[in-house]
Amino acid sequence: MLLRKLESKDAPLMLEWMHDDNVTYDLHTDFASRTLKDAESFIAASEETTEDLHMAIVADNDEYMGTVSLKHIDKEQSSAEFAITVRSVAMGRGYSWYGMTEIIRIAFEELGLNCVYWCVSRKNERAVRFYNKHGFHEALDISHKILTRYEGMKDLKWYSVLNGDDYLNDAVNRNSVASCKVISIKTVPTVDAGELSFFEANHDVPFTIKRIYYISKVPEGIRRGFHAHKKLKQVLFCPYGKIQLILDDGKQREEITLSDPSIGIVIDHPIWREMLWLQRDSVLCVAASDYYEVEDYVRDYDEFRKIIMK
Image 1 (cartoon, helix red, strand yellow):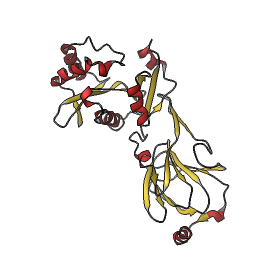
Image 2 (tube, rainbow, N blue to C red; image 1 turned 180 degrees about the vertical axis):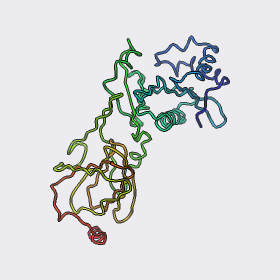
Image 3 (cartoon, one colour; image 1 turned 30 degrees about the vertical axis):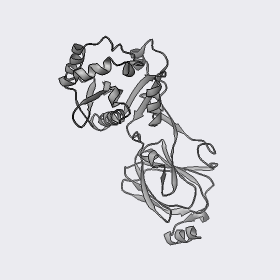
Image 4 (spheres, helix red, strand yellow; image 1 turned 90 degrees about the vertical axis):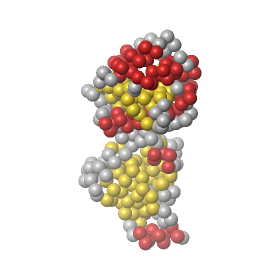
């Protein structure tokens, strides 16, 4: 499967989903009255506009499976609205997920946008289940400028994703790295106004937090860490920038890149750790289970090996 520009030959299959109640029953636009000419006109118009980007999701044999879009592209606000519709034959076959992740990549990497947002009716259980399944956060405080497009519509559920978010869920899908748990930190996004992330001691992390510290102003390419802890438990996360975390539990040495503030690593047993700053001025934050004790540090790797072998 791939994305390409819409072509006139896609019009009949586009009309197919427009007249398919299984596809349109929870959409706010009246597609049932659309004609083949309407589909052809939409495709032709997509070539002329710069405010919207409409692309075809197609199978390997170039068969049209659906349309994915970035609408209301706003370079000043660095944002765009996402939309997607696929034919019934494409549902449950990965076309929606592919089209979504690819258009978000285009928004961030090719158009240089910072935020992609969208909404669905809360009654659209299929769509809500899809977005929740893939870990997208519900957005709050939608701007009046955006809400005016949906005036009169109620029970809308809004979502957003920011440039730098792990929208592919690469980190979370790993579940663990070198026997340390990867967690998704609770996050509440606001369209065009960032995200608020939080976690609570003994609820979201399995220990009481007595100390919080952070490492900042580190040049790109610098390595830090090179130690383990005997008893200290920690949650590590990167609220800004990009840091590679290298963890070693004595049996395996694994790496994970922290670049999404809503991803954390729980270290609750002796683990040798190193941190490589992949981006200048990245910030590493640590929530720790106890006060600073120099005796708890293990700074020699051979000593660390002896401790974990006991």
